[in-house]
Amino acid sequence: MASLVPPPRSSTEYDCAQWYARELGWATAGTSPVRLLTGLRFDVLELPAAAGHAALRRVGRTGPVAVAGQRMRLLVAAGSAEEVPGLLDWLEWGGIDLDLSAVGTGGHITAPVPPGRAAGSPGAAVWLRPPGPRREAERSLPALGGLGSSGGDAPDLVRLVDAAATECHRARLLRARNHLWAHRPTGQPLAFS
Image (cartoon, rainbow, N blue to C red; front, side):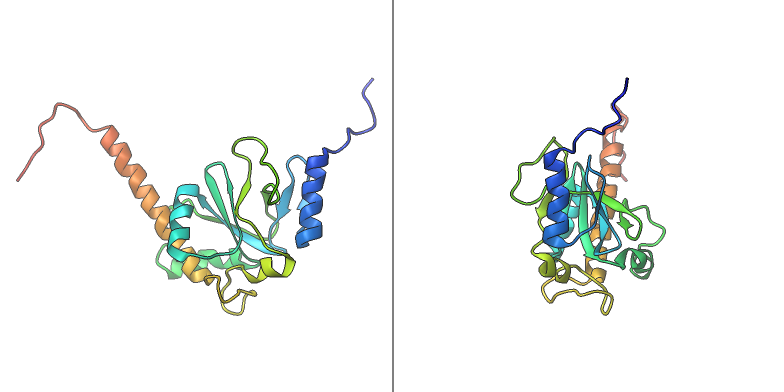
C-alpha cells in the first residue's frame, strides 16, 4: 500500500528556498529543484555561457549573474523582459537568431546554490556574481531609464542587451566557421585568383 504521507523535504532544498525568501525577499516555487520566479523582483537575460562571459568583459559590472551548465543568466530589473524585443529591433538585431532570450512575468529559473554553500551536481546553477543584501540586489539590476532602480555602477539595459547580442552573434559566426572548416573537402587544391 502506498504511503499517504509525502516524503519530508530535503533540508538542503528547504534551506535554499528559505534563504532566498528570508535574505532577498525573492519568491520561490518547488523544492526539487527550487525555482526563482521572474517578473516580480527581477527578470533574466539568458544566453550561452561563452557569449555571456565575453559580454561581461565588455560591460564590466552588472547585477547578479548565474551560470547553469552552458547557459548564463543575467538578472535585470523587473519589467525588462518586455523591453528586450523592442531593444533588439532598435539596436538592429531584430530578426537575427541570437540564442538570447528574456524571461519575465510568469517565468522562472532554477535557483542557484546560495553563496557560500557547496554546489550540488555538476552543471547545477551557481552564482558567478551573487546578489547582495535585499536592497542592494535590486539597486544593482540593469534597467531602462525610469523602468527600474538601476544603480550608478550597473550598466543600463540598452548597453547590456547590445553587448549580449553582439557576443551571441560572434559565437554563432564562430560555430558556423568551425562547422564549415571541419566539413571542408580534403584533397581539393585551393583556388587563387
